[in-house]
Picture 1 (tube, rainbow, N blue to C red):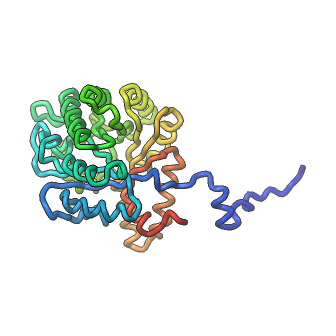
Picture 2: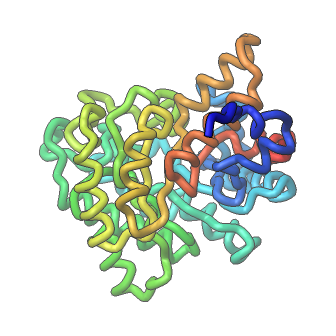
Picture 3: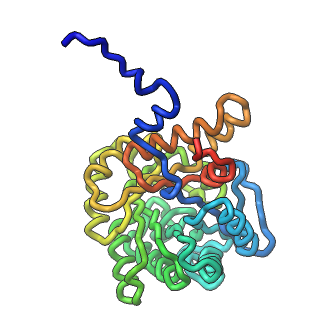
Length: 329
């Protein structure tokens, strides 16, 4: 049958396009990150992350309350501290701002607000690395000692009421050690969202400014993944699932859509992706320069991440999306 093929019939107007859209971005799968610092009445501008701040716990509570009014009910906390030492003691001590923030937010909102927290040592080590160094050698990270400290940090967060732990350090076996620590301490319901494929990336610059966590010497290529590799991510996926991860994450997102797709096709658990600081800053700076229409690029980027296979997305854009009603079309 020689018929005239016209795929544009399904693109003719917005109603038809919405009807036939294969991917519908759902804001219920988005998580808003926050940076929590020590002190009181602190709200500091982060130059590389327009609209995002470092906040002490008291101000964070005010910000979260405003965001809850916009419709945010899933958050992730990252700690900032100037108290750094060789063994990252501040990662789990009584003054840790994330642990204190989790406790206060959970007491206020209970199960109406999902709280995830980053589990990493980079903000607390004097070297700025994600694990503790062997004899001060930043090229030699003590994997097993680091993992034990990470498990202590995870336990303190769980005890404070954290719903979900996000180990982002890329140490070997950390998911299993954290899971065993949680189980043996009675926290069987705490979720682990493993940073399964976290690549050594140039997209993290604004985050490192925000968290004051840039490595003083060297880089993180000895533990974060090589961006030239693809199948290695599937090996990490297999290990994290075996070790007890409930959710697996890819970071960054936009330059790693193939990795997201691979992991979605092979994962038996939910897949998350982190729309990271460099990706966010790129959109903001282009919008400020009048080069793009911000709403359109944000929705396009997040839809691409979702289309690739990530049902959960951490994104600094969530507040803008809900506040400005961008998700309504």
